[in-house]
Length: 556
Image (cartoon, rainbow, N blue to C red; front, side):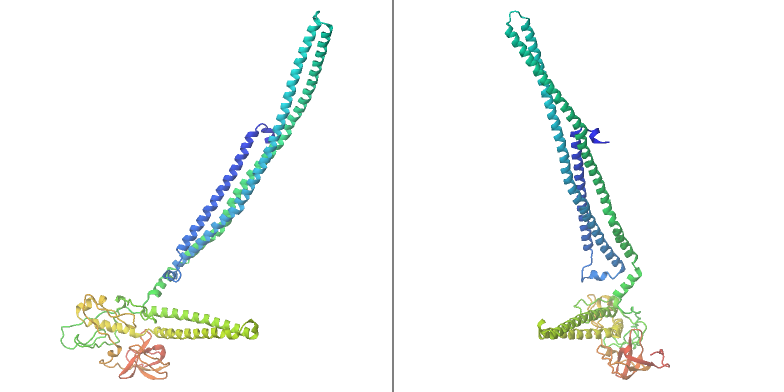
């Protein structure tokens, strides 16, 4: 099967077909180029989508990604970013392995095609020239033959005419012989040109054209093979990134499987746990009895006209109303005292950690400056050691400042880790105070009251009630009540400066009486004398309970 033998007379159609083949190749290049643009656009959109839903730095969204579900979502965003990168790889590989190579090949193909068809046209022009020479020689031979015949006929006519002189006859004979010779020469020339043409024609149709058409056929077949290879490369480019895309998808699945709903639930508890106990039941106050009522653990004994309440500790229902109290909307105190105990502890711990990191950075910087100063001392030509003194003093000053700041927050942290009973107990006492008010005041308590055990809650007047509750101090709680009996003794292990209301200061090694044991909130109620008692952190004292005391527990 050869175009040179099968299509020897289809020069024009072959020219059209090979041009169509080049057009197909250029069309495929354009298709791949548009695919690369789509891949780049898709990758860009995926990256923008991933970036859009990434958590903002130093924002509330960043805190949300502590939850495993949010972490899985973040992993999905990161994997989609990598997924987009693979589409960029597809675009780059298509450009380098297909588009660039095919573009060069098309230019080469056009040049080769042009050369082959130029040779074909040249061969055509040569055979056409030979044909024209043959036709010209043929016409000349025909014309000379006709002239020779006419000259012979004229000679014969003159020779038969008796009236013509002998000289005229001889002249006619010579003319006939001349024309006959010219005809013979034309015949010989025509025969020679005909043989030459037949040779050229055989060369043209059996050598030149088959060779040229064979080259064109090979060129076209190479084009087809190259197109097929490009299509394979097109598929291979996608196949190469498929494993990586599969890993991206596997990463998303793995992140989804790592979601722990129990852990997220625990994080919710840690994030919002206040550390307070639920409010206890409010006891019924019988106002029908004119006599002085028995003092209960959750109520006040004085009438509303008396200016002082006498709450008493020790009841099981503590009457804490934190869930129903509005938080102060003012600025955040430095010690986070506006927060519930558990949240305050976390904030303080976070602040301490941040300060320790800052201290470590300053220490590292100081060490670096010190090393540089040593280098300058050993090699004065490198720099003046005295030039670093100012910077070193500044860093030391920053370290000292940060350490003082850290100590301040560590002190607050040590305080809050004990979970001062003043926070819970004062809420309980205020609950009792509200019980002692009129019924409308009790009905509107959820709207009108805000307690302030540590600055985190404030006293506000309800819009629906004009009842005003006086602020209470822990010292008032011990003024008129009967002193509690001692249930043991304790020895102060450390010095404690009780600055909060309801607490008492102790000195290391001091021995005091225990009148109320730790109820799980980290505080123990002690007494130094009949007029001086309060709470201290349980971890600051070593307790020795009297086994015979009612309700006492034996532990140290």
